[in-house]
Image 1 (cartoon, rainbow, N blue to C red):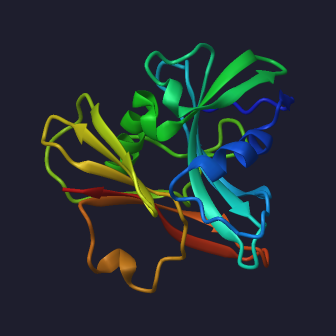
Image 2 (cartoon, rainbow, N blue to C red):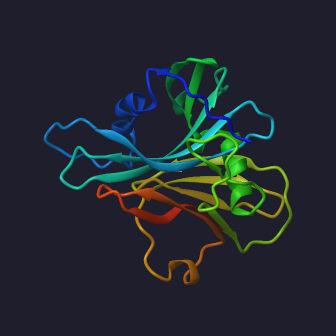
Length: 221
């Protein structure tokens, strides 16, 4: 089960994201030379069965503009650099318990992608973002595809203005995991109409402290 250490990270995640967010194609520039003002707005974690990689799906609200935007940033935390993933490195941070951690955009990390696909299929249990050994039943996966579990290989990653699409190879085909980067509340009835092959739905907190619910990722055939 996911272990959340009560300690410090220097620099902190939000500090790193403040520099990284404006470099992404899906970032909505507030204009007028305003710098991002990232704040936590929710999310969840998944376990790495090998116990090596920290996996977090973070909702990050940017209040720099007139209309706050909530982004979805999947993160992985590693004890060493991931070979071939220099382009996906958000930064490094000194963890008070674990030492230096390499923090990556998880859309490019094969461990996160495999576990996200497992979550869609109901084969991984989502964990609370800030509590150890605590499942989060509010996070749900739904899948209509065929085929059993097996290895997941990243074939390509492409980023657009709304999502990062990860083409993968699985035992049953080559679906695309589309990671939604801008979180929006799901309209009434979205979970029962116009369904993709699968999706992950979770909550986040709005500026007025109420909760919203929508898709963090979808699977496309």
